[in-house]
Image (tube, rainbow, N blue to C red; front, side, top):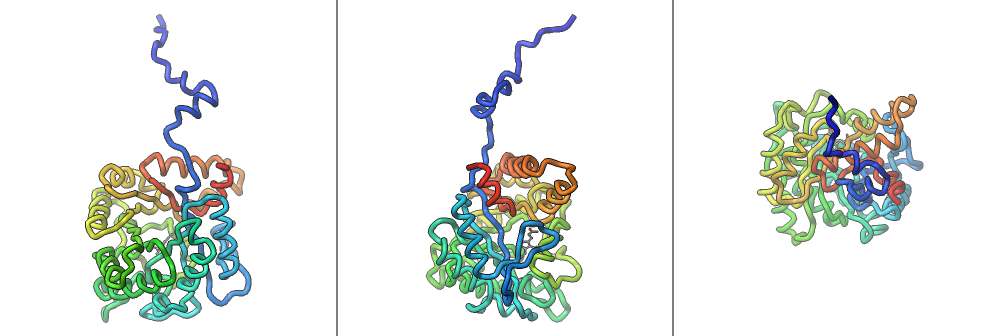
Length: 325
Ligand code: PBG
């Protein structure tokens, strides 16, 4: 005999109105951050072949795209600079006239009140070897010498008007070093986003094209082993102790367990980064007609939020914000 169910979860799925009222996770434009690239020395924005719809901006087109994001209600923009000249120490990174600092100044002036202007604080775009730090004589990434460079970059970015510094280099002690430098110069209100649990991921592939990366080899001596879960929580806890205002897990989709772990214990907001390779996979499959692009984008970002992200960095931020409205 067939037992008639008395408990019927389908009741809450029966109508759009009922589903709307009982949904646990909702996307909101204010919880999206748009990563953007700006390139020195170009007259027109350039497409990035592995990132359809994403561009290397000129300062002018960056201003316009940032204003468009603000208009759509996006919560913030994260700026990455692509300099014309690179060297061993990443000199352009802390030069007030370096492309990223110029861009931060321009965007802060354009829309600094409407959304949070953020800058990537890392040396990889600026070094001729493509690593996130400076190298020692043996060619290894020198942690403590790199912290000195980060301190200097932090001051240049804060000076330029960046409101939230994204520390993505995975050097030990980077949050404490940058906090100390900022406070020492009176930048008490400049906030720190720690890319706390950042994994040595192949999903950053398209980003390398976006920033014209010079990297040979990989970042396994400083970014985390994709196999490690417990370590992600430890890295986030250390960043909180060092003064991070927000912590992040990156990439997002393949690290939702780490994200959930960090969200369960973090006393500060937890963000996640839907990285270039995640976006590229969606675009490629959608271009083949294999998936419904819009639904997959919404589902992927909803999943990241459901796993525990308070906000999400996504190349689709402005587009999603437009759909929500
Ligand atoms: C380092 C940095 C990277 C990304 C953001 N910041 C590259 C890396 O660590 O190799 C990747 C972002 C993406 O793939 O979308 N400055």
